[in-house]
Amino acid sequence: MRILLLASAFNSLSQRLYAELRERRHLVDVQLAGDDDELRASLARLQPDLLLAPMLRTAIPQDVWSALTCLIVHPGPPGDRGPSSLDRAIQDGRAEWGVTVLQAEAEMDAGPVWAWAPCRLPERGKSDLYRNEVSDAAVAAALLAVERVASGCHTPQPQHGPGWRHPVRTRPLLRQEERRIDWAGDSTGTVLRRLRAADSQPGVLDALCGGEWYLHGGHREPVLRGRPGELLATRAGAVCRATPDGAVWIPELRRRRTPGGPATFKLPAVTALGALLPPVPEVPVPLMPGGREGAAWSDIRYREDGPVGFLRFSFPGGAMSTDHCRRLLEAYRFAAARPTSVLVLGGGRDFFSNGIHLNVIEAAPDQAAESWANITAMDDLVAEVLTTTDRLVVAAVAGNAAAGGVMLALAADEVWCRHGSVLNPHYRLMGLYGSEYWTYTLPRRVGAAEAERLTRQALPVSAAAAGRIGLVDRVLDCGPQEFGPSAARLAGLLAASPAAQRRIAAKKAAREADERAKPLEAYREEELAVMHRQFFTPESPYHALRSAFVRKRPAPAGSAAPM
Ligand code: COA
Image 1: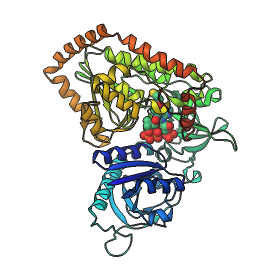
Image 2: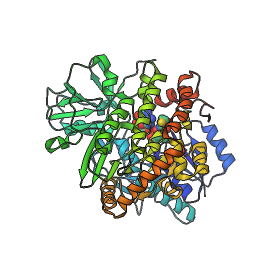
Image 3: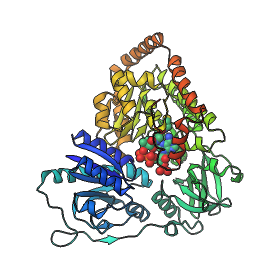
Image 4: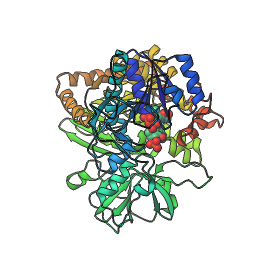
């Protein structure tokens, strides 16, 4: 079928559906919502059989939905209606939820149901759930709906009358008044539900250190206690705030926009507060914690299971600042000095990495200098992975990865991802040439022609396609919660296999041969020479693209050109 995807943003779910539908040989085009005349022009030109809207913040015009089957992906079970379904489900503490694909008509979410799929809601932030459990259910339901439309003989179920067994409930937009945290009265559980329901957008509006901020993300603190509402400590750029029965870690803050003022964007909490932060102690946890410390939140963790080491890291939005890269490099060096034969990187849930931290760069007084510091810190980390020759390194990509984050994974000996992962192995959309030794690792994996195609087309790649072209070695067919344990089990088998020691010896020889052919330093210098120009030329498209990206504005027209 010819399918037009209509989306308010080409976000993770739209990208995944785009890739999965193309996998199934459908002809897929994408139209960004917002301009109805542009939509009508696209429909006239493309003549699609179906319009599918995976993520839509605006209504489809009546003349469009009355002439063409238009399917809406709604992140709620059948009968649930309203614009804040997932937010409300999380804030209400629901453990089971669902995604419905329904036909667009005049009343929002009231059209006949073409398909739906249930999903679980483990205690995670909304955007993590959206990219994982909800995305799996959305893809299952959307593919079934597409199949049913294609069959030409399926009648969708109207939301009333015989055969309809679900309660119908319309719930309004979840506004800040309902999200507000009462620091003196709300339990830690309630605070966490509110933070998770608002993560990563819109955040929970709150007063802090004399200003108004949106709070983003939340993790339970097991030990620290204080006066409710008080800031108690910092860790890894996050702040810890007391509740009546505990405390929570808040990793990121976004300043409230002043009327008529410039758009604001999220930053690590400590960076955002700057001089406003009261004198609270930095309370680190050991990289390899024991006992009670095991429950403490940290963005980087190491553990061992016999011959396998696991270096887990999880940064909001997958963005890695200079500080993140340096701390991860230090942790990597620690892990690489341990007596293991297999080292697994990543492996938790959600984003593996999305490369350098564009928000932190945008907020820096000298953006070119911060871009440079960030990319060189990222390169130092990747170089350390590439030159590890005494053990096998596995990148366990639980969720999506993009740009330098994909290249970080490619530095490992094996790349494993989940079947729902979407990879964007290119930098072009940020107007960058890229570094992270991609000119060495990408062609080494997929061949020069495929590397050229991937970087030029700058399209998302599904896990299945990534497996086919050799971008990843293994695709794990499991749910988001099972990915970590499954990867751990496979890593154990890899370490125990008789081939492991042979592969380690062969790896060392191959690295030495590659180094003789062209030293890693030469790849780095060539890549960084281009990046230096792009960073330090004020008119280079990168600066305008980054500014638009962090402020969630559309990319300036014509600026994402290849170099
Ligand atoms: N720096 C800072 N923030 C980043 C980021 C980066 N490199 N990559 C993603 N994010 C943030 C997004 O702004 C978004 O923030 P929000 O939660 O406030 O909305 C969040 O992470 C999730 O990203 P989003 O774009 O909503 O996810 P997606 O799955 O729809 O799209 C990408 C993923 C990777 C395609 C898209 O985020 C992207 O293009 N990122 C930039 C990649 C890049 O160019 N990196 C720099 C070069 S190495």
